[in-house]
Image (cartoon, rainbow, N blue to C red; front, top):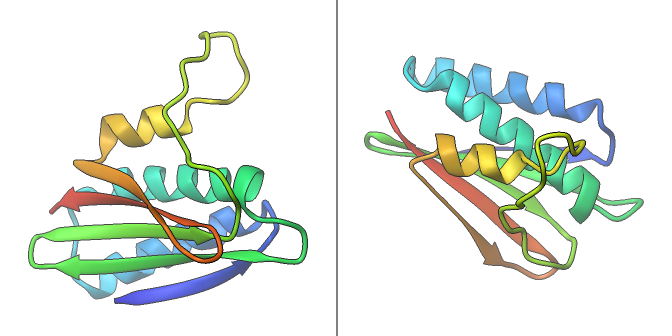
Length: 123
């Protein structure tokens, strides 16, 4: 397991992607890298837009269980994320649609404060 904390800043999404790349490299995981990167980017962006109040941050956890990599994004915001149904011309709103399409499994767990949005990939 590896984790990293990020302050509330849009610039941290790239840092979270780099953390994923470095971690999967250390673990010797070469398959599904692009899928994991896409999903962590979307979950981190959602946390920043909807789940991280001013003065707070979010945490990215990566776990490996045999042939499964699990990515989690923890934030302190209220609410429960859901897959949106926005039109093709609407700006944004497709992050969880992508996660749902790319990850093998995903879900949301409550925590105090906030929530954990997770996704898993068979590698």
